[in-house]
Amino acid sequence: MHVTSVDEHKLRTELVEEFCELVQVDSEPYEEAELAQVVEKKLLELGFEVERDDVGKKIGGNCGNLIARLPEAHCSHEKPILLCAHLDRVPPGFGVKPCLKGDRIVSSGDTVLGADDAAGLVAILAGMRIARRVQSVLPPLEVIITVCEEKGLQGSRHLDYSKLQSEMGFVFDAARPVGVVITGAPTHIKFEVDVIGRAAHAGINPEDGVSAMQTAAEAITHVPFGWVDENTTANIGLINGGEAMNIVCERVHLVGEVRSHDDEVAANVLKQFEECFVNEAAKSGATTKFEASTLYKSYYVEENSEAIQLLQNALSRIGRSMTLELSNGGTDANQFNAHGIESVGLGIGFEQAHSTRESITVEELVAAAKLASCLILRT
Ligand SMILES: [Zn+2]
Image (cartoon, rainbow, N blue to C red; front, side, top):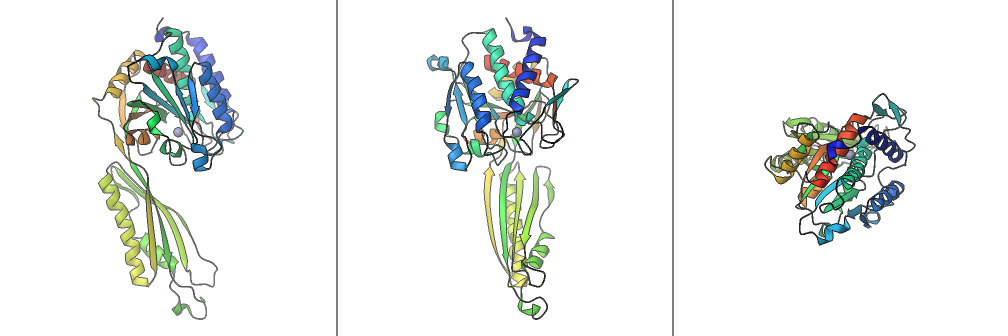
């Protein structure tokens, strides 16, 4: 038997059923326990050994990552490959009511659909089921099901990498058609700025005050915004401050980000932000506090890498052509690459993710499951 000779009608029915089952289990970042239990049971039924780590405790969630391995892999000298999807979905992610309209699955419109990333979970589970029907003993495999991906990749950030043996990974989590491979994603830096001025009565002695708000406003007109170059974006997305109408504003707090595929450019843009605030503060007499943290590092996987070769074969087997793309969003692949596991993101067909208009076609669910099975079988 071969992957391409699976009963298509049966596969479609199974995929729609399992997809709808998973999205109806409530899950949001930090609250993945219920869905983790359902997925864990399915992995056990498929013959995996499943371990749960304690990352939930570290990040304040109710559940850790699932690390699943095939026991038959213990007696193989081959290196495993890693497949990954995440459990959490962005709010509103509770009470999802999936609905099949023609070939497309949509939500009721009050919630997201949660195809990001239930489609990834289903692709891996169904891919495994197909692979089991084709071949009884499978090549070594590690399946990592992460938590809190949507909150800065926290699950994969805190994963204990000493437990993993894979040298290449495939992350089923890109809002692109099956066939698109995300070979690179940027470094993502978050920064926070405090501008501290001096309070005074705005009507009686404003000359004694230093407005943090005005200082911040001046700085904001000089900082980089939007596309800085073709590989770099910058933004300030949050601003808070002030006590009352009649007080010269003493404190303003701002939060922003820089993303770039080039680490050096990212560092330079970040420096520009800091300098703009320092300069304006020096003019007005305010002070500033600037803090930055790297949420994840950029990665780039070469076209001639083993992972791309394997994908090329798998995709041609399921009748899809391969398109290599860069993304400007991070996925668990960023963390895996940072820990020496050469990983790419895979388009799995969901559309309009992170909105209540999110949807996916059954055709894409089928293609993603077949792709997973080819990767598992390494054919
Ligand atoms: Zn996702």
